[in-house]
Amino acid sequence: MNTSKVCKAMLLLALATSYAAVAAEGEVTDSDRIAQYREMISDGNPADFDEMAGEELWKTPSGPKKATMEKCDLGKGPGVVKGAYAELPRYFKDTGKVQDLESRLLTCMTTLQGIPEEEITAKPFSSDAKKSDISTLATYVVGQSKGVTMNVSTKHPKEKEAYEIGKLIFNYRAGPYDFACSTCHTTSNVRIRMQDLPNFKAKNSAQAAYTSWPAYRVSQGLTRSFQWRLNDCFRQQRFPEPKFASELTVDLTMFLAVSANGAPYAGPGLKR
Amino acid sequence: MGNPMKIRAAVKDGVTEVKVLMQHNMETGLRKDADGNLVPAWFITEVKAQHMGRTVLEAQFGQSVSKNPYLMFRFKGGAAGEKITVSWVDNMGDTRSDEAAITA
Image (cartoon, rainbow over all chains, first blue to last red; front, side):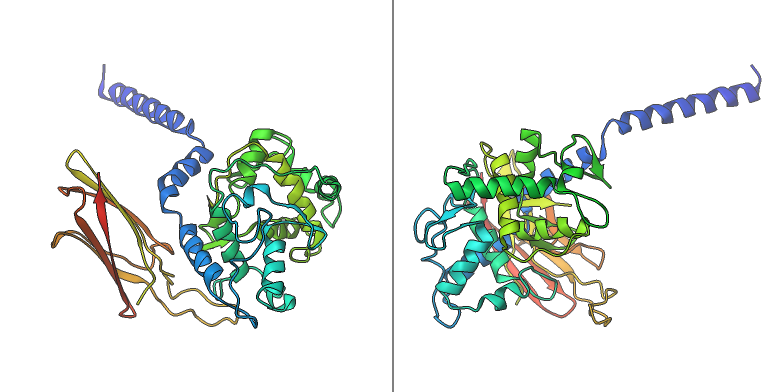
């Protein structure tokens, strides 16, 4: 064998090994890596800080009435926070409406603390410059349902109605892109950029998606509430911006929450 | 003074694993706000971990470290109940120190 042949053989061998290495690595998908990353920092979720801050807000007198939120009825009686989120949205007798967590917090903040509604809904989401109190309170409340099985009722006629309207909204195609929520969220194993999209027609996928919100968004450095999630979904579809805590958002939340029934709530989550 | 850190430390087979979640904005100084003004640099420059007065980790952080940094490290030694202290200094001269007890 002459030198050039040896070189060629070695080159081939090198190529073969590098190809094998690539192939082996290729089996680890991007979503596996994301899952790995999530697991790595799951016990270091910065949303914990918002839970702590939210608890403090909950117990601190605020607003013109100088009242705390400790008398807020989230559906399990005044002041009961533990497990409340796993049963929301639900029908509330006092307001005569189906409410999700954030619209209920809005009710408590306006009635108990006397804060004008416009003041809260003007900027309901956190930004770099200022964290939103209502989002932070929501983060605290959801944290108190960690591990509690999702059990959202549709027994009350209003709850049933909200669920049905939510389902319609989910499937409603409109806007300049002729999009509906269902355009992206009723197929398994599809993704947008690197993120796998949840399929709300598949129980497991719907449960995994719903129970991991609200969540800390690493790329934004902020804990995002469920109202924010929906607001941004509508933006991505180029729909008009939904009003914060409006009936539309509550009904859609109702539909999504019911689809997650039976799974333990796992939030606040951690997203890319 | 900065916001509190979350520290957990657990000892196993003579090696203590420490997990620290710091609360810090970690501004690079390159980002602009909504009005187009530069957001001034503001980041942790030094992190130090001590176990019973012995420095077990010293690190220099910079702009490339993310907001709310998470740090995990291991050191030999440590026993349940002993204290581990973590402190940081940022480029504005602000500092924060927190401690936690090692669990078994």
